[in-house]
Image 1 (tube, one colour):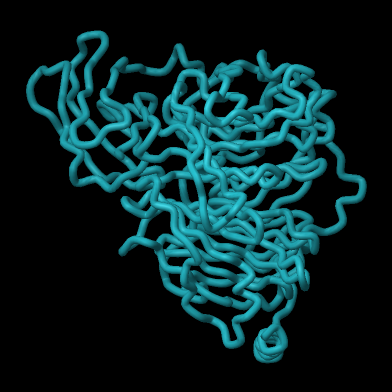
Image 2 (cartoon, one colour; image 1 turned 120 degrees about the vertical axis):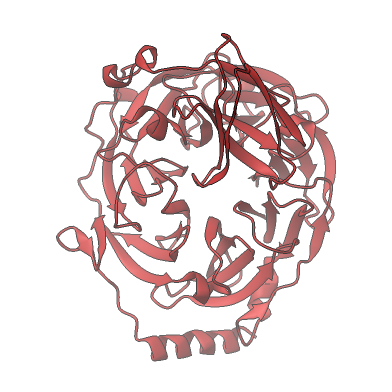
Length: 497
């Protein structure tokens, strides 16, 4: 069957006569860039449906080396052969378990199987044997899942430790939103072995078999959690024993708003964190937090990498000496992190998939996957589709810029921001949310936004109440932002499950 698929790839090449769009003098076509070339671009419609995109992962066929992008969409998952990056081929599309569209979908891979989750109510976890892609003779086809796990309803994100064969669904309707521990060593027969709920809702995470310098945890399996609006949003837990996980540490950081996602350096000595809401709340340039975690019991935030633009950061991954950051409107940014020991980090390449602006906000790149052996990097744009890019030679590029160590920039000092102190319970919430002023001030307006920044509810309230109950039954499951009295800094996150 591979011969027929190869013929399909050859036909696509012959028909499209695709050309690389090189990055020259700061542009690849209409796209601002530096040292990254555009290999090809596929619109949402070319990926099986007009629905928008979200997360992405990758898989390399161990038999023939073909490279596939596993592209999350609002209505399912597209499987794209990117072996020839100039002529990608949509091989198949796996529809979502649930009808309609949902903003969030996440994909990871273990043992040649894709594991797919979504915030959609009742979605559970789809499992697909990727070896089936090899036998598709006449793409594209509708993919049918190989197995299904219904041990939870909705899920925001998924971590997998490929070394141990465990999946960690995160931000579900169970265990206060904390991670599940699911044995997937037999990929089509997952078994729940434990969970961790002590630190509440987790928005994203990475799980590693620890190789860092801390002697207390050599060889342990460590969960690295990014816990949203928790006061100390960087969490470490030893999850080696699945029925007896051991909390290690929690750490806060400067100008914290919403601890969204992050990744460890390959040597497990540093953690790099994206806060999704701080640029919009405080008005400064993109800040990526850097933690020294050589002592897992006592992580220390050593500073921030500051971008030259004001875009909101989202997903990032590390490989070798570089961090690959999807920063929404600023697109893919590549940062040299080889100088962290000397408090140095520098942006060495970028490809801006969203050329209209670099402002804080939620348009642009959701995520990227930089791990193909070929050097191809696949990047999702939420509305414009899939970009396949490749870096030029970075010979001579090194980390030379000092890491910023300011606690909070003077121009956005938290003390100078107008604050309205309030609480909201319960969180996570099902139907009704109680909002209470903590200093007796009136609540006159309540706004609810989804994480794209789209306003889904706007209530103007009469009277002088310092407490308000709002009905959320009409909202879809997922994470939302709540703003009181129209003040940007008065924003908190809640989860509806």
